[in-house]
Figure (cartoon, rainbow, N blue to C red):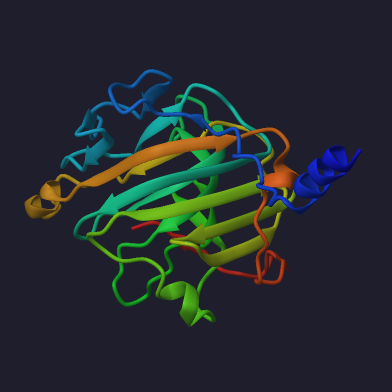
Length: 245
C-alpha cells in the first residue's frame, strides 16, 4: 500500500508537458511536390534551391507569379521562414481565390505583407489583395514594436493563425496583426513574386525571395493557438484603396 501511494504521489508531482503540435510539412525542401506555379507567361523565376522555395523577378513579367499549394485550407495555423534581399516586393497569401484566365492577376486573397520599404516597415500587416488594387485591412502605422520585428537580409519566422473570422500574425514572435474579417474563407496558400515591367531596373533581377520550413496545423487549433496581446480589430471599411504600382 505504501509503495502504491508513493508511486501516485510521484506521478502527481511530475511535471506535465504539452504535446508537440502535429505539424505537417507543406514543403519537402527538395522539389515542388504539393505546389504549382501560378501566373501567366512569361513567369518570374520560381524554383527550389538550397532547401528553399526561391524566386526572383524577371523583367517583362506583366503580372505576379506565385508558389501556390495544390491543397486548400480554411482554418489553420501556418508557420514559415522567409529571407528577403534588396527591395523585393512579396507577401504570403492565404484563403486564395483563383480568378478567371482573363484576369490581370491569377490569385486574390488575404496577404500578409513582406514590406520592401525600409522606412514604412509594415511587414506583418494584412491587406486584401485583389488584382490591380489592394485595400489595407491592418497597417502597422500605430505600432512601433511591430514595425521593428522584421529585418532585411535575415531569416524571419512568420506565424499566421486563421480561425473563422479571426486572423492573427506574428513576425519573429512579435504580434503584428489581429484582424476580424470574413471576405475569404478557404483556399490555397501562395507566396508571391511581384510583377516586373520591361523597363524596370535590371539590378532588381538579382534580388531573391526564399521560403523554407513551411508547416501547417489544421486540427485542434484552439489547443495550439498562442495568446496575443494585440486587441482584435474590425477592418476599417473607409480605408483607401491604393492602386498598385
